[in-house]
Length: 139
Image 1 (spheres, rainbow, N blue to C red):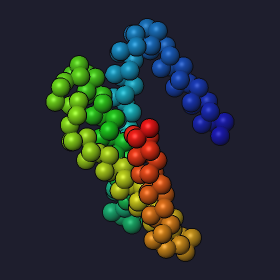
Image 2 (cartoon, one colour; image 1 turned 90 degrees about the vertical axis):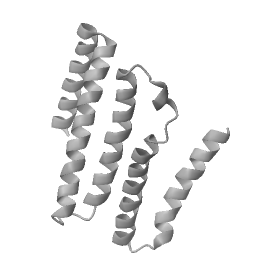
Image 3 (tube, one colour; image 1 turned 120 degrees about the vertical axis):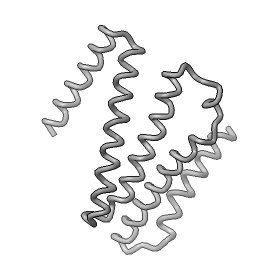
């Protein structure tokens, strides 16, 4: 944990320094680009682990990180291209959001199997999140 916290401090410091030296827009673009590249690498690693049958959670992690890559990448490109109208309400973003959902569902399936729970365990968190999203939109 000490190593992780030290690393967190060092990275945060580097990002704050980038903000001071380069300005917010450049620091944002660099940081988001790096996060997207790392997310894509992590996603690929988990898909490879799934292919090698190393862990049952790998497929869910692969899809989750693919969703991260896509959603963050979408907004990163949106900012870099100076908010093009074609990206404002494009349903193309939903493909990446779907990756998040698939990753979550696969995670819940593995956890449910590990705990000996049925499909209801899988459906409750997903239904709860969808309900919460609907309430937030309606409110």
